[in-house]
Image 1: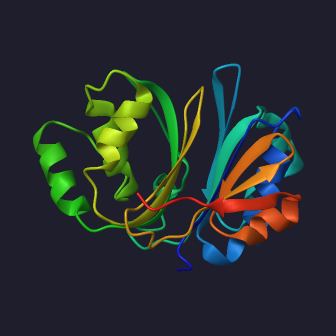
Image 2 (image 1 turned 120 degrees about the vertical axis):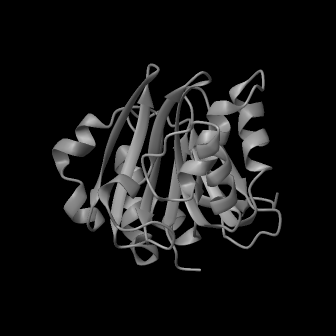
Length: 216
């Protein structure tokens, strides 16, 4: 179960969610020590910071101050698929026909090799060897009319034990595999909504537990 930790916050009235994301990642550090990252969004502009190492070594005060925005996601990585190279650190942020999107992933996709081979055969160019990137290529190639529909279409093509937190310029979206193998909980922090791998992250930032994300 201790394979990567993810957290996302949306709707806060504070100037930035970055301090809460940072605190949440600190308490989720036991889930991954290879790399850490945060992506926030302010006025349709994404801000990102990620690097190999522990949370305290990746983020200094100057980094947190630059991560402005009232919505964001964070990740601590334990490499189960893909090596520990910095290119595999998350969140992974891309821009495509559906707009910019950032993705954090916990778990393994058992059909990722087959999907990857098919996508490469169709001309897709992969920048990482992480199975997480497969989801983003499926998303980018989707003909669905909205980003939300494209996410649903892409996620329904993957199989395995996983939880995802995705950030667009308008939405924070949480996804859990159909069997609920990987944990993901929802909390409330004032008017803000928090999703994270474990309730200990809610406790540290002063949020209250609401429910688990339902499988599927």
